Length: 527
Image 1 (cartoon, rainbow, N blue to C red):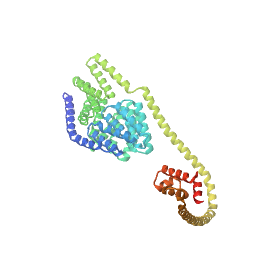
Image 2 (tube, helix red, strand yellow):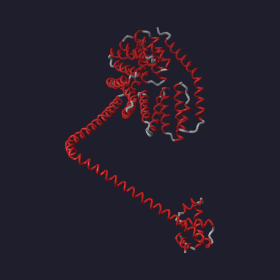
Image 3 (cartoon, rainbow, N blue to C red):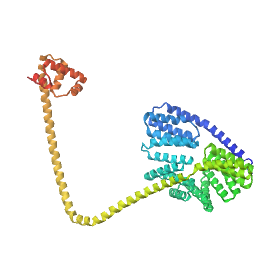
Image 4 (cartoon, rainbow, N blue to C red):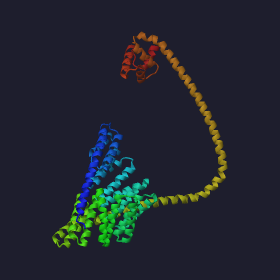
Protein backbone atom coordinates (compact mmCIF):
# COMPACT_ATOMS: atom_id res chain seq x y z
CA UNK A 1 0.00 0.00 0.00
CA UNK A 2 2.85 2.36 0.83
CA UNK A 3 5.63 0.92 -1.34
CA UNK A 4 5.94 4.06 -3.43
CA UNK A 5 5.27 6.57 -0.65
CA UNK A 6 8.88 7.66 -0.18
CA UNK A 7 9.46 7.81 -3.92
CA UNK A 8 6.32 9.93 -4.38
CA UNK A 9 7.34 12.38 -1.66
CA UNK A 10 10.86 12.72 -3.08
CA UNK A 11 9.51 13.21 -6.59
CA UNK A 12 7.08 15.91 -5.49
CA UNK A 13 9.85 17.70 -3.58
CA UNK A 14 12.11 17.68 -6.66
CA UNK A 15 9.33 18.93 -8.92
CA UNK A 16 8.55 21.68 -6.41
CA UNK A 17 12.18 22.79 -6.20
CA UNK A 18 12.57 22.81 -9.98
CA UNK A 19 9.32 24.73 -10.46
CA UNK A 20 10.19 27.39 -7.89
CA UNK A 21 13.72 27.69 -9.26
CA UNK A 22 12.36 28.35 -12.74
CA UNK A 23 9.95 31.02 -11.50
CA UNK A 24 12.68 32.61 -9.43
CA UNK A 25 14.93 33.22 -12.46
CA UNK A 26 12.49 35.78 -13.84
CA UNK A 27 11.70 37.35 -10.50
CA UNK A 28 15.35 37.46 -9.49
CA UNK A 29 16.15 39.73 -12.43
CA UNK A 30 13.54 42.18 -11.26
CA UNK A 31 14.82 42.07 -7.68
CA UNK A 32 18.42 42.59 -8.81
CA UNK A 33 17.38 45.48 -11.06
CA UNK A 34 15.59 47.33 -8.26
CA UNK A 35 18.47 46.66 -5.88
CA UNK A 36 20.98 48.07 -8.37
CA UNK A 37 18.96 51.30 -8.56
CA UNK A 38 18.67 51.56 -4.76
CA UNK A 39 22.39 51.04 -4.20
CA UNK A 40 23.34 54.27 -5.99
CA UNK A 41 20.73 56.40 -4.22
CA UNK A 42 21.82 58.84 -1.47
CA UNK A 43 21.74 57.42 2.07
CA UNK A 44 18.33 58.38 3.45
CA UNK A 45 15.61 56.91 5.65
CA UNK A 46 13.52 56.31 2.53
CA UNK A 47 16.34 54.27 0.98
CA UNK A 48 16.53 52.03 4.08
CA UNK A 49 12.76 51.51 4.09
CA UNK A 50 12.81 50.59 0.40
CA UNK A 51 15.68 48.13 0.94
CA UNK A 52 13.79 46.44 3.77
CA UNK A 53 10.66 46.22 1.61
CA UNK A 54 12.68 44.78 -1.28
CA UNK A 55 14.25 42.17 1.02
CA UNK A 56 10.78 41.21 2.26
CA UNK A 57 9.55 40.78 -1.32
CA UNK A 58 12.65 38.76 -2.24
CA UNK A 59 12.05 36.47 0.74
CA UNK A 60 8.40 35.98 -0.26
CA UNK A 61 9.58 34.99 -3.74
CA UNK A 62 12.06 32.56 -2.11
CA UNK A 63 15.02 34.53 -3.46
CA UNK A 64 18.03 34.60 -1.16
CA UNK A 65 19.91 37.90 -1.25
CA UNK A 66 21.33 38.84 2.16
CA UNK A 67 23.25 41.73 0.56
CA UNK A 68 19.98 43.71 0.41
CA UNK A 69 19.31 43.62 4.16
CA UNK A 70 23.01 44.02 4.96
CA UNK A 71 22.97 47.18 2.85
CA UNK A 72 19.92 48.39 4.79
CA UNK A 73 21.80 47.81 8.06
CA UNK A 74 24.94 49.55 6.79
CA UNK A 75 22.96 52.57 5.56
CA UNK A 76 21.01 52.78 8.83
CA UNK A 77 24.25 52.83 10.79
CA UNK A 78 25.64 55.66 8.65
CA UNK A 79 22.59 57.88 9.12
CA UNK A 80 21.84 56.73 12.71
CA UNK A 81 18.41 55.37 11.75
CA UNK A 82 17.56 53.35 14.86
CA UNK A 83 14.19 52.10 13.63
CA UNK A 84 15.81 50.95 10.39
CA UNK A 85 18.37 48.90 12.32
CA UNK A 86 15.68 47.33 14.48
CA UNK A 87 13.42 46.48 11.54
CA UNK A 88 16.34 45.11 9.50
CA UNK A 89 17.55 42.74 12.23
CA UNK A 90 13.97 41.69 12.96
CA UNK A 91 13.52 40.79 9.29
CA UNK A 92 16.82 38.83 9.29
CA UNK A 93 15.55 36.92 12.33
CA UNK A 94 12.34 36.00 10.50
CA UNK A 95 14.23 34.72 7.47
CA UNK A 96 16.56 32.68 9.70
CA UNK A 97 13.50 31.10 11.31
CA UNK A 98 11.97 30.27 7.93
CA UNK A 99 15.27 28.51 7.15
CA UNK A 100 15.04 26.58 10.46
CA UNK A 101 18.13 28.37 11.84
CA UNK A 102 16.51 29.16 15.18
CA UNK A 103 19.74 30.11 16.97
CA UNK A 104 20.47 32.83 14.41
CA UNK A 105 16.83 33.84 14.51
CA UNK A 106 17.01 34.46 18.26
CA UNK A 107 20.30 36.37 17.95
CA UNK A 108 18.91 38.70 15.26
CA UNK A 109 15.60 39.29 17.02
CA UNK A 110 17.38 40.13 20.29
CA UNK A 111 19.63 42.58 18.47
CA UNK A 112 16.55 44.10 16.82
CA UNK A 113 14.87 44.44 20.22
CA UNK A 114 17.85 46.36 21.62
CA UNK A 115 17.24 49.03 18.96
CA UNK A 116 13.44 48.97 18.92
CA UNK A 117 13.14 49.57 22.66
CA UNK A 118 15.00 52.87 22.12
CA UNK A 119 12.44 54.04 19.57
CA UNK A 120 8.75 54.88 19.64
CA UNK A 121 7.37 52.19 17.31
CA UNK A 122 5.53 50.12 19.91
CA UNK A 123 3.87 47.84 17.36
CA UNK A 124 7.19 46.86 15.79
CA UNK A 125 8.57 46.16 19.28
CA UNK A 126 5.60 43.87 19.99
CA UNK A 127 6.17 42.00 16.73
CA UNK A 128 9.81 41.46 17.68
CA UNK A 129 8.82 40.16 21.14
CA UNK A 130 6.34 37.71 19.60
CA UNK A 131 8.98 36.61 17.07
CA UNK A 132 11.39 35.89 19.92
CA UNK A 133 8.68 33.83 21.59
CA UNK A 134 8.22 31.74 18.43
CA UNK A 135 11.96 31.19 17.89
CA UNK A 136 12.59 30.20 21.49
CA UNK A 137 9.65 27.78 21.34
CA UNK A 138 11.14 26.20 18.22
CA UNK A 139 14.32 25.67 20.24
CA UNK A 140 12.15 24.06 22.97
CA UNK A 141 13.19 26.76 25.44
CA UNK A 142 9.74 27.19 26.93
CA UNK A 143 10.75 29.50 29.79
CA UNK A 144 12.30 32.07 27.46
CA UNK A 145 9.46 31.75 24.94
CA UNK A 146 6.92 32.26 27.71
CA UNK A 147 8.65 35.41 29.00
CA UNK A 148 8.73 37.09 25.60
CA UNK A 149 5.14 36.13 24.75
CA UNK A 150 3.93 37.66 28.02
CA UNK A 151 5.93 40.85 27.43
CA UNK A 152 4.30 41.09 24.00
CA UNK A 153 0.87 40.43 25.52
CA UNK A 154 1.32 43.08 28.20
CA UNK A 155 2.42 45.72 25.69
CA UNK A 156 -0.31 44.73 23.19
CA UNK A 157 -3.01 45.11 25.83
CA UNK A 158 -1.71 48.56 26.77
CA UNK A 159 -2.11 49.84 23.21
CA UNK A 160 -5.21 47.65 22.60
CA UNK A 161 -3.84 46.04 19.43
CA UNK A 162 -6.00 42.94 18.98
CA UNK A 163 -3.92 41.22 16.31
CA UNK A 164 -0.80 41.32 18.50
CA UNK A 165 -2.82 40.19 21.53
CA UNK A 166 -4.05 37.17 19.54
CA UNK A 167 -0.53 36.22 18.40
CA UNK A 168 0.77 36.39 21.98
CA UNK A 169 -2.18 34.41 23.39
CA UNK A 170 -1.73 31.70 20.75
CA UNK A 171 1.98 31.54 21.53
CA UNK A 172 1.32 31.16 25.27
CA UNK A 173 -1.25 28.45 24.56
CA UNK A 174 1.25 26.53 22.43
CA UNK A 175 3.89 26.78 25.17
CA UNK A 176 1.42 25.22 27.61
CA UNK A 177 0.81 22.40 25.11
CA UNK A 178 4.57 21.83 24.98
CA UNK A 179 4.67 21.61 28.78
CA UNK A 180 1.54 19.41 28.86
CA UNK A 181 -0.54 21.91 30.86
CA UNK A 182 -3.59 21.45 28.68
CA UNK A 183 -6.25 23.22 30.76
CA UNK A 184 -4.18 26.41 30.73
CA UNK A 185 -3.60 26.07 27.00
CA UNK A 186 -7.35 25.67 26.49
CA UNK A 187 -8.00 28.87 28.46
CA UNK A 188 -5.78 30.94 26.18
CA UNK A 189 -7.01 29.38 22.92
CA UNK A 190 -10.63 30.03 23.89
CA UNK A 191 -9.77 33.67 24.57
CA UNK A 192 -8.37 33.88 21.04
CA UNK A 193 -11.46 32.21 19.57
CA UNK A 194 -13.67 34.85 21.24
CA UNK A 195 -11.58 37.56 19.55
CA UNK A 196 -11.87 35.80 16.17
CA UNK A 197 -15.65 35.44 16.41
CA UNK A 198 -16.07 39.08 17.38
CA UNK A 199 -13.91 40.30 14.49
CA UNK A 200 -15.35 37.71 12.04
CA UNK A 201 -11.83 36.54 11.21
CA UNK A 202 -12.44 33.26 9.36
CA UNK A 203 -8.78 32.25 9.09
CA UNK A 204 -8.33 33.03 12.76
CA UNK A 205 -11.39 30.94 13.63
CA UNK A 206 -9.94 27.99 11.70
CA UNK A 207 -6.67 28.25 13.61
CA UNK A 208 -8.38 28.64 17.00
CA UNK A 209 -10.76 25.73 16.42
CA UNK A 210 -7.82 23.58 15.38
CA UNK A 211 -5.83 24.57 18.48
CA UNK A 212 -8.78 23.87 20.79
CA UNK A 213 -9.28 20.50 19.11
CA UNK A 214 -5.59 19.70 19.53
CA UNK A 215 -5.79 20.39 23.27
CA UNK A 216 -8.81 18.08 23.62
CA UNK A 217 -6.86 15.47 21.64
CA UNK A 218 -4.02 15.55 24.18
CA UNK A 219 -6.59 15.45 27.00
CA UNK A 220 -7.93 12.28 25.33
CA UNK A 221 -11.37 13.84 24.88
CA UNK A 222 -11.52 12.47 21.36
CA UNK A 223 -15.12 13.34 20.52
CA UNK A 224 -14.59 16.98 21.46
CA UNK A 225 -11.28 16.95 19.60
CA UNK A 226 -12.91 15.64 16.42
CA UNK A 227 -15.74 18.19 16.67
CA UNK A 228 -13.38 21.19 16.79
CA UNK A 229 -10.77 19.93 14.30
CA UNK A 230 -13.39 18.84 11.77
CA UNK A 231 -15.19 22.17 12.16
CA UNK A 232 -11.89 23.88 11.40
CA UNK A 233 -11.37 21.62 8.36
CA UNK A 234 -14.82 22.47 6.98
CA UNK A 235 -14.07 26.19 7.21
CA UNK A 236 -10.63 25.65 5.69
CA UNK A 237 -12.05 23.79 2.68
CA UNK A 238 -14.84 26.31 2.24
CA UNK A 239 -12.39 29.20 2.03
CA UNK A 240 -9.71 27.12 0.20
CA UNK A 241 -6.80 27.65 2.62
CA UNK A 242 -4.66 24.78 1.34
CA UNK A 243 -1.70 25.26 3.68
CA UNK A 244 -3.99 25.16 6.70
CA UNK A 245 -5.90 22.20 5.29
CA UNK A 246 -2.77 20.03 5.54
CA UNK A 247 -2.40 20.83 9.25
CA UNK A 248 -6.03 19.85 9.88
CA UNK A 249 -5.44 16.50 8.12
CA UNK A 250 -2.31 15.98 10.20
CA UNK A 251 -4.25 16.55 13.42
CA UNK A 252 -7.06 14.25 12.34
CA UNK A 253 -4.46 11.62 11.48
CA UNK A 254 -3.01 11.95 14.99
CA UNK A 255 -6.51 11.82 16.51
CA UNK A 256 -7.41 8.50 14.87
CA UNK A 257 -3.94 7.14 15.64
CA UNK A 258 -4.59 7.84 19.33
CA UNK A 259 -7.97 6.12 19.01
CA UNK A 260 -6.28 3.06 17.48
CA UNK A 261 -7.92 3.40 14.05
CA UNK A 262 -4.63 3.22 12.12
CA UNK A 263 -6.20 2.82 8.70
CA UNK A 264 -8.32 5.98 9.08
CA UNK A 265 -5.33 7.78 10.57
CA UNK A 266 -3.13 6.93 7.57
CA UNK A 267 -5.82 8.12 5.15
CA UNK A 268 -5.76 11.56 6.74
CA UNK A 269 -1.96 11.62 6.83
CA UNK A 270 -1.86 10.73 3.12
CA UNK A 271 -4.09 13.73 2.39
CA UNK A 272 -1.60 15.99 4.24
CA UNK A 273 1.66 14.74 2.63
CA UNK A 274 1.35 16.33 -0.86
CA UNK A 275 0.13 19.60 0.63
CA UNK A 276 3.06 19.81 3.08
CA UNK A 277 5.42 18.90 0.26
CA UNK A 278 4.04 21.62 -1.99
CA UNK A 279 4.42 24.19 0.79
CA UNK A 280 7.91 22.83 1.60
CA UNK A 281 6.79 22.51 5.23
CA UNK A 282 9.53 20.12 6.35
CA UNK A 283 8.61 20.24 10.04
CA UNK A 284 5.06 18.97 9.52
CA UNK A 285 6.11 16.65 6.68
CA UNK A 286 8.66 14.89 8.90
CA UNK A 287 6.04 14.53 11.64
CA UNK A 288 3.53 13.10 9.18
CA UNK A 289 5.98 10.55 7.70
CA UNK A 290 7.05 9.33 11.15
CA UNK A 291 3.41 8.90 12.19
CA UNK A 292 2.62 7.06 8.96
CA UNK A 293 5.53 4.74 9.81
CA UNK A 294 4.11 4.30 13.33
CA UNK A 295 0.74 3.31 11.85
CA UNK A 296 2.47 0.81 9.55
CA UNK A 297 4.16 -0.78 12.55
CA UNK A 298 0.80 -1.24 14.20
CA UNK A 299 -0.63 -3.03 11.15
CA UNK A 300 2.54 -5.11 10.54
CA UNK A 301 4.10 -3.40 7.49
CA UNK A 302 7.56 -3.29 9.10
CA UNK A 303 9.73 -2.66 6.02
CA UNK A 304 7.72 0.30 4.76
CA UNK A 305 7.36 1.56 8.33
CA UNK A 306 11.12 1.77 8.85
CA UNK A 307 11.65 3.52 5.54
CA UNK A 308 9.11 6.26 6.32
CA UNK A 309 10.36 6.69 9.90
CA UNK A 310 13.97 7.09 8.69
CA UNK A 311 12.96 9.67 6.03
CA UNK A 312 10.93 11.61 8.61
CA UNK A 313 13.71 11.42 11.21
CA UNK A 314 16.37 12.66 8.78
CA UNK A 315 14.13 15.56 7.79
CA UNK A 316 13.63 16.43 11.47
CA UNK A 317 17.42 16.36 12.04
CA UNK A 318 17.92 18.64 9.05
CA UNK A 319 15.74 21.39 10.60
CA UNK A 320 16.78 20.54 14.21
CA UNK A 321 13.21 19.83 15.31
CA UNK A 322 13.75 18.19 18.70
CA UNK A 323 10.15 17.07 19.15
CA UNK A 324 10.12 15.31 15.77
CA UNK A 325 13.58 13.82 16.37
CA UNK A 326 12.33 12.43 19.68
CA UNK A 327 9.18 11.14 17.94
CA UNK A 328 11.29 9.46 15.23
CA UNK A 329 13.61 7.69 17.70
CA UNK A 330 10.63 6.48 19.74
CA UNK A 331 9.12 5.06 16.55
CA UNK A 332 12.44 3.28 15.84
CA UNK A 333 12.37 1.85 19.37
CA UNK A 334 8.99 0.28 18.53
CA UNK A 335 10.28 -0.96 15.17
CA UNK A 336 13.45 -2.57 16.57
CA UNK A 337 11.51 -4.08 19.46
CA UNK A 338 8.94 -5.64 17.13
CA UNK A 339 11.68 -6.97 14.86
CA UNK A 340 13.63 -8.26 17.94
CA UNK A 341 16.69 -6.09 17.23
CA UNK A 342 17.11 -5.17 20.91
CA UNK A 343 20.56 -3.63 20.57
CA UNK A 344 19.32 -0.98 18.12
CA UNK A 345 16.15 -0.63 20.16
CA UNK A 346 18.23 0.30 23.23
CA UNK A 347 20.36 2.72 21.22
CA UNK A 348 17.26 4.43 19.79
CA UNK A 349 15.71 4.60 23.26
CA UNK A 350 18.77 6.41 24.60
CA UNK A 351 18.60 8.95 21.77
CA UNK A 352 14.87 9.49 22.27
CA UNK A 353 15.35 10.00 26.00
CA UNK A 354 18.19 12.46 25.47
CA UNK A 355 16.09 14.61 23.17
CA UNK A 356 13.00 14.33 25.35
CA UNK A 357 14.92 15.44 28.42
CA UNK A 358 16.13 18.51 26.55
CA UNK A 359 12.57 19.46 25.60
CA UNK A 360 10.79 19.63 28.94
CA UNK A 361 12.16 19.73 32.48
CA UNK A 362 10.68 20.46 35.84
CA UNK A 363 12.64 23.67 36.41
CA UNK A 364 11.38 25.10 33.14
CA UNK A 365 7.79 24.32 34.08
CA UNK A 366 8.13 25.93 37.51
CA UNK A 367 9.68 29.02 36.00
CA UNK A 368 6.88 29.28 33.46
CA UNK A 369 4.21 28.96 36.12
CA UNK A 370 6.00 31.58 38.21
CA UNK A 371 6.07 34.01 35.30
CA UNK A 372 2.39 33.48 34.60
CA UNK A 373 1.42 33.98 38.23
CA UNK A 374 3.53 37.14 38.40
CA UNK A 375 1.91 38.53 35.29
CA UNK A 376 -1.65 37.70 36.36
CA UNK A 377 -1.00 39.00 39.90
CA UNK A 378 0.45 42.27 38.63
CA UNK A 379 -2.60 42.78 36.43
CA UNK A 380 -5.02 41.98 39.26
CA UNK A 381 -3.12 44.19 41.73
CA UNK A 382 -3.21 47.09 39.30
CA UNK A 383 -6.94 46.59 38.78
CA UNK A 384 -7.57 46.34 42.52
CA UNK A 385 -5.57 49.51 43.23
CA UNK A 386 -7.42 51.35 40.51
CA UNK A 387 -10.80 50.25 41.90
CA UNK A 388 -9.73 51.19 45.43
CA UNK A 389 -8.77 54.70 44.37
CA UNK A 390 -11.99 55.11 42.42
CA UNK A 391 -14.01 53.88 45.39
CA UNK A 392 -12.26 56.29 47.79
CA UNK A 393 -12.88 59.19 45.45
CA UNK A 394 -16.56 58.20 45.13
CA UNK A 395 -16.99 58.09 48.92
CA UNK A 396 -15.36 61.49 49.39
CA UNK A 397 -17.54 62.94 46.68
CA UNK A 398 -20.66 61.47 48.29
CA UNK A 399 -19.80 63.08 51.67
CA UNK A 400 -19.18 66.53 50.23
CA UNK A 401 -21.79 66.66 47.48
CA UNK A 402 -24.70 67.47 49.82
CA UNK A 403 -22.90 70.34 51.54
CA UNK A 404 -21.65 71.65 48.23
CA UNK A 405 -25.16 71.57 46.82
CA UNK A 406 -26.54 73.75 49.64
CA UNK A 407 -23.67 76.26 49.43
CA UNK A 408 -23.79 76.45 45.65
CA UNK A 409 -27.59 76.89 45.66
CA UNK A 410 -27.53 79.77 48.15
CA UNK A 411 -24.57 81.61 46.62
CA UNK A 412 -25.06 80.92 42.94
CA UNK A 413 -27.20 83.98 42.17
CA UNK A 414 -24.99 86.39 44.11
CA UNK A 415 -21.88 84.84 42.62
CA UNK A 416 -23.12 85.17 39.06
CA UNK A 417 -24.11 88.84 39.50
CA UNK A 418 -20.80 89.62 41.20
CA UNK A 419 -18.85 87.82 38.53
CA UNK A 420 -20.58 89.71 35.73
CA UNK A 421 -19.90 93.03 37.47
CA UNK A 422 -16.24 92.16 38.01
CA UNK A 423 -15.86 91.07 34.41
CA UNK A 424 -17.29 94.40 33.25
CA UNK A 425 -14.92 96.36 35.48
CA UNK A 426 -12.00 94.25 34.42
CA UNK A 427 -12.82 94.79 30.76
CA UNK A 428 -13.05 98.56 31.20
CA UNK A 429 -9.82 98.71 33.17
CA UNK A 430 -8.05 96.55 30.61
CA UNK A 431 -9.19 98.77 27.75
CA UNK A 432 -8.05 101.92 29.57
CA UNK A 433 -4.71 100.38 30.46
CA UNK A 434 -4.10 99.28 26.90
CA UNK A 435 -5.05 102.75 25.60
CA UNK A 436 -2.66 104.47 28.07
CA UNK A 437 0.19 102.15 27.20
CA UNK A 438 -0.34 102.70 23.49
CA UNK A 439 -0.22 106.46 24.10
CA UNK A 440 2.98 106.15 26.12
CA UNK A 441 4.52 103.95 23.48
CA UNK A 442 3.79 106.52 20.77
CA UNK A 443 5.40 109.24 22.89
CA UNK A 444 8.49 107.09 23.42
CA UNK A 445 8.74 106.44 19.69
CA UNK A 446 8.54 110.19 18.96
CA UNK A 447 11.19 110.94 21.59
CA UNK A 448 13.52 108.28 20.22
CA UNK A 449 13.10 109.59 16.69
CA UNK A 450 13.85 113.13 17.89
CA UNK A 451 16.96 111.96 19.72
CA UNK A 452 18.16 110.05 16.69
CA UNK A 453 17.67 113.13 14.50
CA UNK A 454 19.57 115.35 16.95
CA UNK A 455 22.37 112.80 17.24
CA UNK A 456 22.59 112.65 13.48
CA UNK A 457 22.78 116.46 13.22
CA UNK A 458 25.39 116.60 15.99
CA UNK A 459 27.50 113.96 14.28
CA UNK A 460 27.33 115.79 10.96
CA UNK A 461 28.31 119.07 12.61
CA UNK A 462 31.15 117.45 14.46
CA UNK A 463 32.51 115.70 11.37
CA UNK A 464 34.07 118.90 10.16
CA UNK A 465 36.39 118.95 13.22
CA UNK A 466 37.58 115.34 12.81
CA UNK A 467 40.08 116.18 10.09
CA UNK A 468 41.92 118.48 12.46
CA UNK A 469 43.28 115.43 14.25
CA UNK A 470 44.64 113.75 11.13
CA UNK A 471 41.97 111.01 11.05
CA UNK A 472 41.44 109.02 7.84
CA UNK A 473 38.06 108.73 6.15
CA UNK A 474 37.41 105.25 7.62
CA UNK A 475 38.56 106.36 11.09
CA UNK A 476 36.18 109.32 10.90
CA UNK A 477 33.37 106.90 9.96
CA UNK A 478 34.22 104.65 12.93
CA UNK A 479 34.33 107.69 15.25
CA UNK A 480 30.91 108.75 14.01
CA UNK A 481 29.49 105.35 14.92
CA UNK A 482 31.22 105.52 18.35
CA UNK A 483 29.63 108.94 18.93
CA UNK A 484 26.26 107.42 17.94
CA UNK A 485 26.72 104.81 20.69
CA UNK A 486 27.23 101.71 18.52
CA UNK A 487 29.23 98.73 19.82
CA UNK A 488 32.19 97.18 17.96
CA UNK A 489 29.96 94.36 16.58
CA UNK A 490 27.35 96.85 15.39
CA UNK A 491 30.04 99.06 13.75
CA UNK A 492 31.43 95.90 12.07
CA UNK A 493 28.00 95.09 10.62
CA UNK A 494 27.36 98.69 9.46
CA UNK A 495 30.76 98.97 7.73
CA UNK A 496 30.82 95.37 6.43
CA UNK A 497 34.28 94.76 7.93
CA UNK A 498 35.62 92.32 10.53
CA UNK A 499 35.65 93.00 14.25
CA UNK A 500 39.43 93.04 14.25
CA UNK A 501 39.47 95.81 11.59
CA UNK A 502 37.14 97.91 13.74
CA UNK A 503 39.43 97.41 16.74
CA UNK A 504 42.45 98.52 14.66
CA UNK A 505 40.63 101.72 13.60
CA UNK A 506 39.67 102.46 17.21
CA UNK A 507 43.25 101.94 18.36
CA UNK A 508 44.47 104.43 15.71
CA UNK A 509 41.77 106.91 16.73
CA UNK A 510 42.82 106.73 20.41
CA UNK A 511 46.44 107.27 19.40
CA UNK A 512 45.74 110.29 17.16
CA UNK A 513 43.36 111.91 19.66
CA UNK A 514 45.70 111.02 22.56
CA UNK A 515 42.83 109.46 24.58
CA UNK A 516 42.33 106.13 26.34
CA UNK A 517 38.67 105.33 25.84
CA UNK A 518 35.49 106.18 23.96
CA UNK A 519 34.20 108.77 26.40
CA UNK A 520 37.46 110.73 26.27
CA UNK A 521 37.45 110.53 22.45
CA UNK A 522 33.88 111.87 22.19
CA UNK A 523 34.62 114.67 24.69
CA UNK A 524 37.75 115.68 22.81
CA UNK A 525 36.10 116.04 19.41
CA UNK A 526 33.18 117.94 20.96
CA UNK A 527 35.42 120.30 23.04
